[in-house]
Image (cartoon, rainbow, N blue to C red; front, side, top):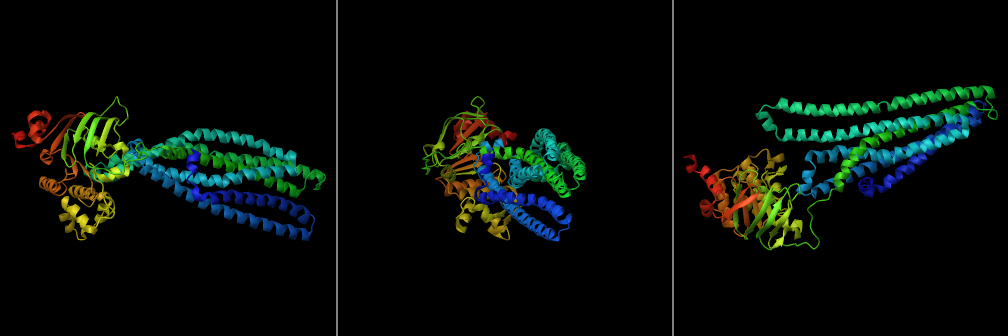
Length: 581
């Protein structure tokens, strides 16, 4: 897990390695300061020697300045390294997500991926900065302060050493208790993000049904869960500081009492016992050792909080896309012919639980194929197998005579344009949205595609025409306008296969007919698959595919299906005047 995440350091290895280097020298300088103070007191102040006072005073100021310099350099390099590491980590996560198949995306919820890219990466960044800076400084301070204390007086130093195992045990128990709580917190964050996203996307529905109180209650419930879990964990962690401080002050009092007795007995003569300066140095080193132990505990707490985040980030980085281009992939799609050979599909990848089965269909290049069926019959699932948005669980799908799994993904999807059920437009101008289909499209090419999709007339009615800004999600255009813009965007790809997944449901029948007529006249060479609920949208297709319960129940022309298909005839009758009678 750590090794996988550490790969994101890359060009920031230098500042990451320099930070511990600076920290070591900062600690060395800090360790000299109590020693110099002890010398200043014993040989300068107590002895009344001004020369010694000046000499040790200058050395004290110099050591402090050098320590501060290394501290500043260490802090700066740690900030650069951690910020750069977080940037790379977000990039790696986002790049990995972009290569996920639909199956991979289904495994991680969108809200969960957002949390991983934001909250979890921030936690990992903080832990990394703490690791390269304080995780080096604190152990070094602990080690050097113990050594320096032992050089002053071994017996008294043992008092500090005796307190350390007690603090270490308490620290371990706190970590063991809080880690599962933080794990739950971050899982609950996913649910919180999901509620917020659903509310913001569906705010018009919320307003229309006056469900603001219901949505507020949902949000409040999850917020309360996060508050409860965080409070429970923080209450345990809150014991850390008073425990450390209490032990530190108690040990300091014991040391001061023991050392005071030694000073009185020796008359402040170093050869006989202990001096005032040595007492000050011993207390300083003891305090530093316990403080460094407290800092270590804070590091462990931070690592405990970030461990759950690291696991969640590593899950995304470890996830391999289930749909990738093969070696020696086919780069060209010869034509728009499509063949389904014994195709079956399961979203769970389980051949015993197929939602689409026994599909054997051959479609010639340039044909217009209508696809009709009830809700849940597998229409969208079937067409999503063509551009490899999903892979068939059983059987094979062939395009242009090649199994789709033999193609380079980019080459295949460039020649298979698909307008999904859920139309999506992005923030930007109409031109910028259209150029998703072809980044190099000229104005003339965009206008032609929009004319084919019957989008050109309403675009020209906008004051800014093709430079009109589309708001996020296309909220400032109607459903029908959004659908026509998405169809135009797909046409700009110059595809060999065009799939319209119920993509004219929001346009009126006259516009629908005009779009189909334009397709027949201007792009006859393109294979067109049209999923529709309206018989009128597909009855003039070359052939019509009828699905029911995940199976192909019939395939033929409109007239043939009217004669032999009960399902098709029932749909037709219900949508025409005969159905009304």
